Length: 276
Length: 333
Image (cartoon, rainbow over all chains, first blue to last red; front, side, top):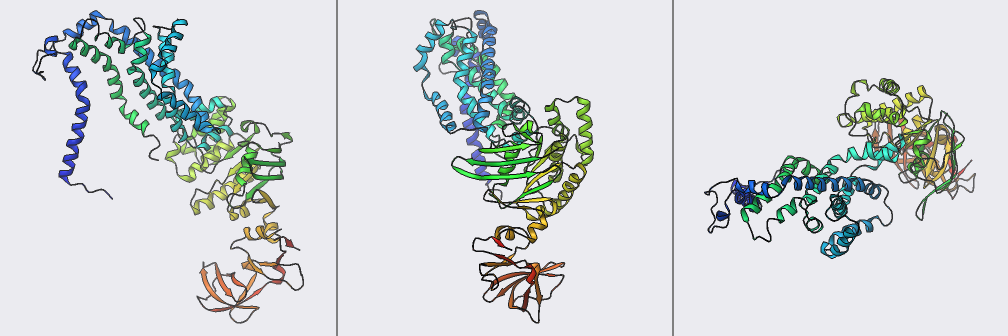
């Protein structure tokens, strides 16, 4: 039976939902608006919402001062690279835990997740030293490795839950049909879990794209992704809000667009198996 | 060829032994049905033969070759699952072709074999559909198609009809029986439905708590059950059991008589009783009759037998069809 909602109640709920949505979106909107202001207007009090002198100056200056494209490329390589590498490791691992669980599989899963409970700064020094000694500091390879390891528990957990939804009998049928382990994973499991794998992929790209702690601490110039590019606008020379906002907008734009176009896939993946 | 031989095969899950030592031989071309109540180990036994479970001890031979440790794909067996286990992301054509692709056959060979299988199973018009777009019966046929293209040494069926509705089940039963006659390949079929077992099998293996209770042709099991379990499991409605000694055989604890071996009369007979429930099916009438000192007996009458609740009837057992069992439930001949 459909639940009865009175029109006034419905209006109130709609209003509430929009308010929360706008509240969450407001900082991003404000950043975007500020990026089109002059530095003086950016710090003006009271601030003007829309009635200011619109300018592209900040973007031009940011582009001139730092090589946006290099940082963009670094971000793409690091986030996609660590996600792909993570999936390659996580698919077989999750397969194992979902379909041939051992006595300690559950402990293993919780233990992997527990690594996410550790504050990253706790291992900064050892990792920094390892990176320094192995020449991985300020390299894309180094960041791909560290971000892969950091997000691996989440990837495995997500894939594990998706794989659990796949009926065991279908994999057994593949085995009876002569599929080797590799063929079983490639032709049956992966295509069947594709919505789940796709949303894991997207979510992880977003996580890696936005990751700032390790990218800031382990890079200097060459391998610095967009997070470091933003950070470079909030330091020694003092704060330049308008330019910082322009840099931020340029940094989040690609991932916002990716997220916007893939939202259907993301939602489908995140609710995968919820409704049979 | 499809000879399958199990020697002293056992299976334990942890501490629990689900299959105590079993010996069984299935000869080439036979249609063998494993039947038993749920949890009796029949599916486990099938999965051991398939290689989907590892035996704990013992030996499985397929065509004289020791297959105990051979992986499922290499045993040359094909299996049809209860849930059909079709690949949902592949078309019917690709589903059926999958085992051939895994074998590495050429495209022409695959196409030819898929076309033949589709023709046998009336699936030609559906080859480009996905499993989700098919009815239950069609899905079942795709699952069978995927099994027959491989030309396996034997087919293994794990309760293949239990997800179908009653009328479709009868049709598929006939189709599988037909398929067995035309392919003449060994088939091992697991079911909990004794009617499926009786109608399809050359040989029935009755399982109970992992043990083989009796192996034999359907009529052997029906007319000469080795113990009370088999006597009660085979035949529908169930055999009536009456506790009590038979004067001529002192060791008898229980006697059994099938509903169809009791003669029914309104006038006179051995036992008098009152009708509790009368089931009029048209072709048969099943009466559940309460007889004093014996309990409720089920009786079958041919065609219509006009009685209703509370009427008095007389029952007479056919003495040549009475089964006697000792205190352990073993048949006494």
